[in-house]
Length: 126
Image (cartoon, rainbow, N blue to C red; front, top):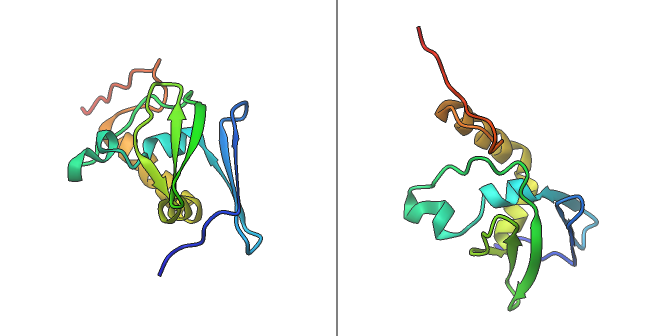
């Protein structure tokens, strides 16, 4: 079973948000940072061993491109522009945003890493 296809997609560069609207009236706002850390690219997915993305709190968009009838390619201002966000994956990211974001924050905490590229985290364990 396939997930819905968005009927409207808006990339808002100033607010660093991707807006998705669906035929059933549901709409979602996905922050650039969230989409960047969950990029479907091999660079992020790590060929089966995901690479934790850190320091992406300030990342924004530079563009969006429709890919056939099945995906969009997002371009980020940190130079990342690989990975195709299929309709199914975008719907998953939209509907599971709270759970997936918390999982990301938990991974950062466990790794002693930060969303802020200008912040170094040092964990002291006595």
